[in-house]
Image 1 (cartoon, rainbow, N blue to C red):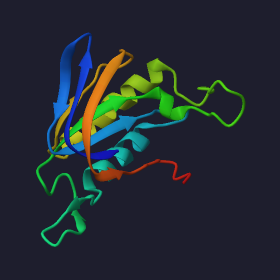
Image 2 (image 1 turned 90 degrees about the horizontal axis):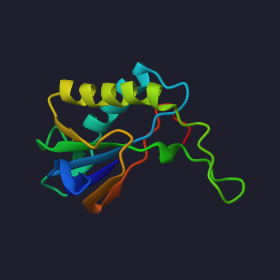
Image 3 (image 1 turned 30 degrees about the horizontal axis):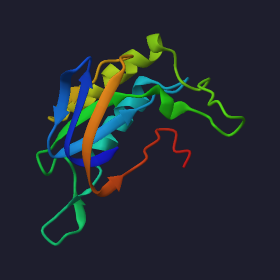
Image 4 (image 1 turned 90 degrees about the vertical axis):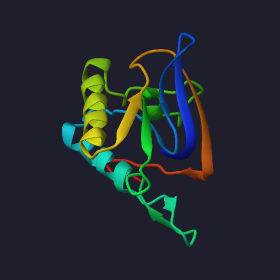
Length: 145
């Protein structure tokens, strides 16, 4: 997840989603992930204090600043590149399991009152953004790091 001042996603030359001040979330769904994982990720993304307050401290969440979100599905986050030269994607959930959890994540963000736009699941997307800070935070519902 990244703190952005602007982000957009284009598919086939057409902008399909955008966010102004807010967060850009790349979401990878792993084998074994559940609706509880999607909800946890949405809650963490919405409430994480990565925006600066008046004193310049990161004390505010995207909700606190009235920001929006751009959520992009990205199975390549599940890549395992520890061996060889070609990453393995065996830990990535198959599309029929990943799509509903991605949609659950988006719905959970919206349920928290956030404006959320998305890319297109399984599409070849072009993502453009301005990362403020830069601030990039890795989140994992399994808490492996």
